[in-house]
Structures are given as structure tokens and as C-alpha cells.
Amino acid sequence: MRRAGLLDIGVAGPAASFILSLVLLGVGLPLSSVAPGSASQWLPFVVEFGGQPISIGSGPLVHAMAYMVFPTQLGVSPILLHPIAFAAWVGLFVTFLNLLPFGQLDGGHILYALSGRIQRVASVLFLVALVPAGRLWWGWWLWAVLVLVLSRGRLSHPRVVQPQVPLGAGRMAVVGFSILVFLITFIPVPIRL
Image 1 (tube, helix red, strand yellow):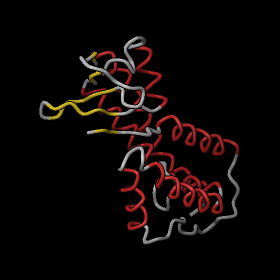
Image 2: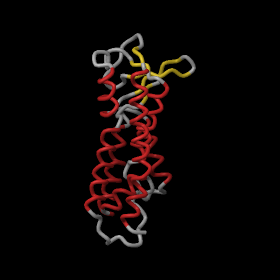
Image 3: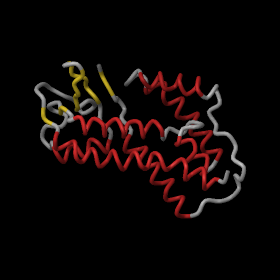
Image 4: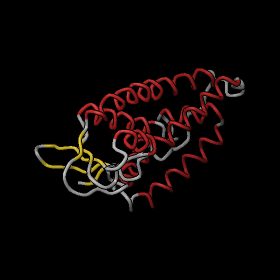
């Protein structure tokens, strides 16, 4: 497989998920409402399951879009997400997880297409970063264990057939777009029960 093909495959899913989730967030946030109680900047949203409120966090993109709809209430009062907005939130969070730079995740494909060495270094750094991140949210520890178990301890991406073929400027822009999506969809504390 060529590096360009690997990049195309790696970007296709996250790009589609990101665009669809962005549209759904734009539709769902105005349908959301302010709930009674207090909220924080880390956990500004709530959803209800079985009548029980569950606090969920915010990343840069969701926070910025919510601020446009709820400029004075965001981070002060909980925002009860409409089901469409919650579906968008889940889509963006899953997109972020898929863009982690580990082996067979799309983030691993993208970084390996850029450089095998960069992908190996990034995967080790992100695995190490998940350990202190677990102090914010225990789920990051679970992700660290899952990554190690599912990858059987190999964090690097399997070799491609034609690793020396360079990527063009257009595909380098796609790598930049993917990194931007990764950064703006990161949610430090996704959920608090």
C-alpha cells in the first residue's frame, strides 16, 4: 500500500464524522436548554439517562459553539443537551479517540503516512500522557490499558509496501486538518457520573 492511500483511508472516516457531527451540533445546540443548578467550565453540560443527570465535558470546539448559543450561562448553569446535540458530542468524542496516534486507529494511519518515526514517538508519548490524564478522568487509564491489550504491546503501525513515496502538498494540508480536528475535539474530562 502507498503512503498516500494509507493517508486517504485514515482521513476519510474522521473527516466524515467530524463534518456530520459539526452539522448536528449546529442544529442541536439551539434546541438545548439551561437546566437548574450550577456547572463548571470543565463540565458545562448535562444529559439525562433514566431521569438521572450526568455531567459531560467540553472541548474547544463544542465550548466555542455553545458559547455562541449560551454566552452568559455556559459554565455557570448546566446546559441540558438536546438529543441531537448529544449525538454530535458523542460523534466528536469518538472522532477524537479515533485520531489518537496508535497503531491501527485512524490517527496511527495518518501519522504513519506522514512518518513512521513520528507515529512511533507520538504513540509512546500519548500512551505516557494518558497516565496523568487519568487523574482528571479515569477513562483515560482504561484507554491506556485497551491500547496496550488490543495492540499486543506494539504501538507502532505495521509497515506499508511503499513507504518512500512522498506525500504532496495537498495531502500535507489534510494531515494539518486532521491534527487541528484532533486538538479542537479533545475533551479533558468527558463525563462525570
